[in-house]
Image: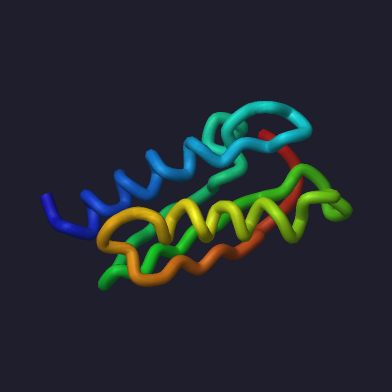
Length: 87
């Protein structure tokens, strides 16, 4: 298995620790993390927020970025909000 695949798995585990405080569940479990890719130590994460006016629109992406960057081997994380609404 490649190091990128292993790092992707570790990033996904780390993101399970990021919880939406209004709902009390992991963003991963809520389906808010849509895509995770890792290449050359850079994690790219696509996520959705609950609504366009989500009061945590600045907080949650930063928490996702920090959680990914705490994974050993990740030099940088980029988080993009790609939509709104829970599945």
